[in-house]
Length: 221
Image (cartoon, rainbow, N blue to C red; front, side, top):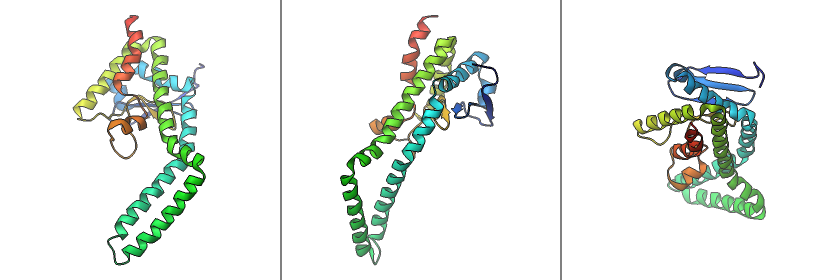
């Protein structure tokens, strides 16, 4: 890795966070610079560099672009459902609902006719989330193999404690793939969904999983 190959961005934020973005960009928050020790900060940056070295930043960016059609389709479906619900209570609610139902039936027929496209659109968000979760674990391994395993574990414990203090299982922390990848656990879009669906759509593994994968490096001390 040559010197000057990456550009460091500093975000004026009060959250513990770092990111890797396409274009050889590594970002870190002002809070992280001020509160983390030198070793912990080095571990965070090593994690983000791991995303770049393994090509996660560009692959995640491409994945985000490919997932756009699926997101648009789901957005249209949700708006149609809301529209049917709202217009059902108006003067012309019945006929408006019928018209929308007919349009929905037409869309359904097209979806069944081209089921392979529909299946791809439905599965894309889950596949993308699974890939990004795997990328997080690989970036953790990259930092740990470079000798930063214990310090990285310390940062993960700090983020886990911060989440508990906020009374939430979501926090801003270690990711590093995609358009912007941050170093912590991220929830699915539109809120903090819980349960199996939330886990499948999460772009980051939970802290317990990440610490479990780091355990072999901690035993080597």
